[in-house]
Length: 231
Image (cartoon, rainbow, N blue to C red; front, side):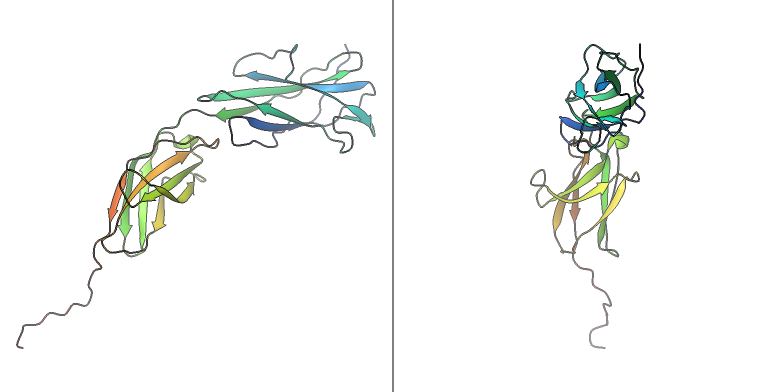
């Protein structure tokens, strides 16, 4: 059987942040004169490829010695929408094959893999915050058993306990971090409530962390002079 070789790496071009994932693959054109198209195959985890059922079949046309799916642009960029199961971490593997006008197929291209993390993520814990009167900031720190899956944390503040939280900052987990500082205007006697929420790269978010209560005391008095009355 005649063999074809897909000579370039399949590249993940884009991923939408939703349960339906829009992927774009690309490869170099095959140059055989009897080329007819390409097929794309997918497997999940340790499963095997079903070569009788490609997830995509794309015809191509010969232009300037190469067979292209997009003839005007002379590219082999192929879009595919992946529908992963929610609530799980799933690794998908992909290969492509070329086929000719007689229905003969090449071997597999190089294999590429992509992992989609849609599993629930636990809340951060040991969330603490201390007001620093010198810098005028609240210095926060926390721990998180799922920190390796966190893309960023959201810092939320409310004037009431247990509800009405408003986002005031996001802390990107690049490089890995478990602390941040937030500038807090000094309002003597004010009380605020804070929680931390973790987000994965796919947009999954954790429950709230433990709630912090931060109360600012009265403005300290400096240079106070004391004397004995009548002297």
